[in-house]
Image 1 (cartoon, rainbow, N blue to C red):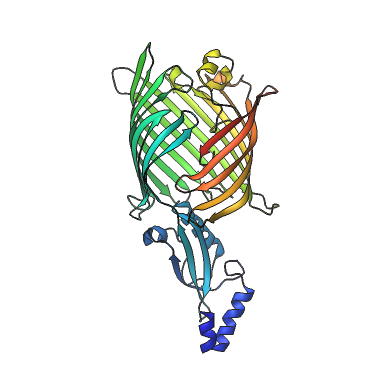
Image 2 (cartoon, one colour):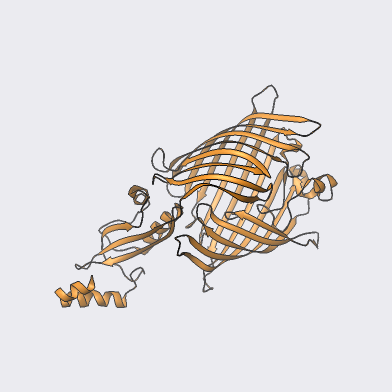
Length: 433
């Protein structure tokens, strides 16, 4: 553009050349009037999906803070491997604010792969994933597995099905697997319908109804629970980026009540709380974040052994191998099993390789993490007060990945009462918090 302008109008071409030479077009020091807003690169995603995430007004000076927030919102859709923006100058001195999008890998044809889950082990999993279905940011997943977990199911999600951030999620399926630490097999048949609503950009609510039947069985006994569970979720979420936040807070309150719907009288209340904060450390050359989370899980009602939780593994206190039946019935680590849970984590996340697009169009990057966890659990709140905590410390990596967003690998060592174990490796999907 500059060459053609310079040949036709040398004085204007020189003026534009000097602007490009001495001005960073995406920095706060360059504040032209924005004449038009455009975006490019959304080959599959429909325009309105992107348009509703752009808040920068037209006819005002460039505000890089708003443009960066727009970029983050588009990135948080999970549809694009890379999102950037630039203010492109026009001959009249104004500019076009342009967002450059690179769509992520969004569709997985029917395929079968070996998969690993920490609590069920290896399975052969077949699935068909339609992410961003028809370009409308809807997702449809069909899947099943054989091995450590036998399952089949379907999930459909639309984050804007009834207008501005009013979402719907439907899931149903069947799962059969060996219980992690009880000498029982567990069969689960479930149907879940969830509706969500955002109020503004940070306050997020959801209400769901789940119809579920759980059967615990072995060669001696069989015990079934058939129940209806309404659930209410309230979140305050000011994170800038979901996959690796550099600032913001995430507060979550979830309450659900399970009520028996067959001849057996049964009810169980669960209240889960989570509090997370993220802060950038400016003294480092690379993007470095300190992140802190504290979580509480409470239960009351008709509490039985089959509803026991545990500490350890990738989701609570790392550095402890997930328990098995030998550990549970051996009673050497009773302090890891309970109904009331408290656990907290501190992470320092350093971006070694910033997320970028590979030659095959898939995002890649690398984040190195140092972590320290603490937690305690007991059968009741009264017992929790007298319990000694367990600790876990170690390191890990985070790799951005299409559809699942983040692959997580951690290695840590666990300790209690000044005694430390030999360590444990944890593989997970998504950030711990």
